[in-house]
Image 1 (tube, rainbow, N blue to C red):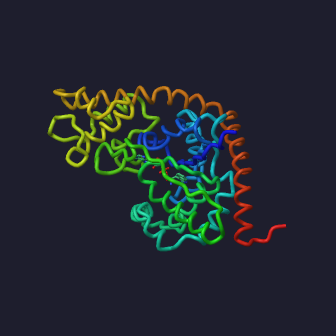
Image 2: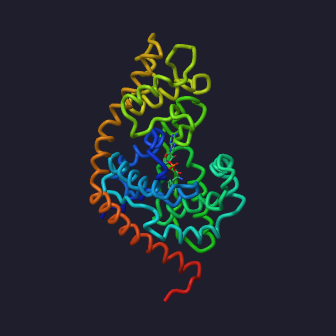
Length: 333
Ligand code: TYM
């Protein structure tokens, strides 16, 4: 008999349309894992609540996020797709794990430091314990691998530490999860300030490309991307962060290596290069956008997928949670 497939889990917040960074760093890679692994992909609405949300918007965006995951190639016949708040075991496990996570280690999380300085008027405890809920997401399904962008590596490592600590205290229970980070595109940078991560919360809309942007808008954003005055398309993150970022994007979109790209644009200006990068993104996103619009218009289908996904996830989650409850000593009849 074949060995059971290893499990993959990842999540994305429904805080607006996905950026090209979300796509390249994470979502694009998720469908590629579906045949080899047992994959679970989650729209993490509870995580989104750590920043103030407009309720009607959050609801709408959860649908949109799920539609975008399916449009990106996640096949609900192969992978589970669901909304986090539909599976209450995530927050139930998070409580137990929070009693096995240290205040000091949570305080060291760079995302907490970043977000609490950006939202100084709302440093809620959810923002602080966010990585514990994320650990619960992963550990509830005993995921081996977590495909994420570079910014989430620290959180996955924390999940691993918590898993190890729990296993040590209560006997072997959890798989120790590992981050799966792409070689190219783990950190897609802002088009305006290429030393900063591309993020949809950036005040400057020209700094990010959204998966839902029209071809015109994508072209304009790439044409106004900040580069340098050197005029040579060459990969050098330190001295040429703007061009290197565009090369990374182009490389992922076309499958070409950096040397090949350098040769392709040898002796040509940045204008030609930027246009080619924009076109590669437009061509890649076009079918995804068409599929997204089609799925979003078919609400009964989308709801059916999410309902089915949540039901199967709850079944899995319950098994693990019962085991944990027994191990920590909760009375069970
Ligand atoms: P989120 O919603 O901020 O981002 C979703 C995924 O996109 C990646 N990403 C990027 N990758 C490359 N370049 C960028 N500029 C860029 N911006 C975002 C992120 O690394 C992420 O993989 N905490 C998570 C959500 C989460 C989760 C989980 C992930 C909750 N529970 C369990 C994995 C497993 C987050 O806020 O991602």
